[in-house]
Length: 339
Ligand SMILES: [Zn+2]
Ligand SMILES: [Zn+2]
Image (tube, rainbow, N blue to C red):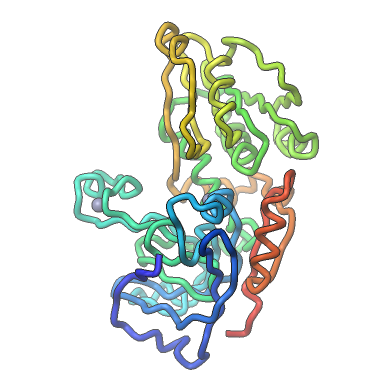
């Protein structure tokens, strides 16, 4: 992660402010350090962080997945302070996290999120957003409408991941979908699918979290008694290997299990029902930002109820402790310095 994007354009706007604060993960420890202003390669924007969100992926990076060492953070809202695109300067933006090469077959097909040589903001070889300043290509940035608050816009990236399901499977209005897991992603998925017109049943274990989905129109079930072979679509978002086994048990013959949990360990699953019942297993990851921005802009997703706590960027170690406590939903980091 220390291999910051190479570039030679000097960041005049922040050069004068001296050392800047950034959060680091190294050997399982979260710390803050003083860093130089990031260099802005041509075609990139220099962005001043406003608010960032801690995601389960960040907690996993801390636990050592991907052998990560560097500046994490991929959910953010910021303000462009320098760019080769004058219309971006001074604007509030969110940013697609995959930095694609723009030249390979995936990129040519509009699937830069699957580009083989991509880097990923705060995850793979591009310094992340838990820093006072970050860089991203101009082409990754999306303007945030004025009436969408920072605290809403910081959910664009995870909500885009929820909306990805709708890019992958056709769900006509009224389709019954089960969502397993009432964590941050499960709640966003339930709400995105409801806004799309699906009938959603959310299975979870936390009454407070289930209420958020219930208010949005979901049927909620606080139980370990999962129905057998009942749904044509089951979205697994529990974050656990057990969730996948349950999802396979709940899906009907010829149905589809959509796998949203990034499970890192090997998962042992009895594959015979998958084969005999001709069940489709579909992996699902990042999504397009536009549908997520539209949902937030139209007020169709309640993210305010999902905010658990807020910390200054400099208090990131405490923020990570809070974010990993059971039952806690979204923890924000705010850029509070005057730099
Ligand atoms: Zn995330
Ligand atoms: Zn590419």
